[in-house]
View: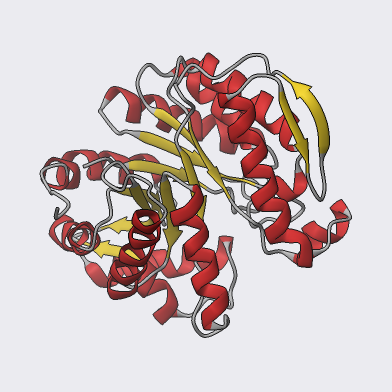
Length: 329
């Protein structure tokens, strides 16, 4: 099993500064690297308290790479619709070199209308820009003298320097979690089909265990039909965690934390579905359910003001047993 940390900056600057937030993150990363966690994931968002303090995850992850020896930086995710894919391919290749071949690259489509508006991109073009962008990035990493005539980008005989350290290229993940209550079935299927057709891994969050298992099976079947290897494909779930021997206290703190830093509109039931909380055994049980459903990489974010204390308890009281879990064949 592989376990990671997720850094998603949702805070108010009246509570602490962006500089203080990243300093705390880097301290946690150094500790996680020493104690054997596998990855650190960072997001791309703009303009809002919801993620907006991380407009370029490559910058933060370069600092992660410089301060660690073994932990894998993961973009979770970069947005092709808001970035020229040639520039994005080059920046990510540099990060793979800085980390000496430790990078995983997650791509996402984005969903916040204001971000599309400010960047002058139509949300109706999101899917097409995503697929064209991912294709360009992968080709520039793996080929020389690349020519491309697409809907949005055009170039001829381009050879990218530097190339990534990893061959043929860093693992590519796609982040997607279409909500059945908001999304038509054919749109959901198309989003999941894209993962099976284009990616080496799937990132998602706040997905019930049964739905996770069904979607992961669908993605792998798409990959099989496309003639792609499935044995090496991975799946990552972003899971909120609050460890406390008093489960009610853990849930209460997590609800207050997430309503403060995400949205007061988040209901208690919604949060409870996203959360592994309570004593270490209860947190382990929640993780085990997703591992049994096929999750290869639970990625944890602590829904608590005591980030250092939560990490310490997770490493000491949850991880030893969690690392012994195995994904069914």
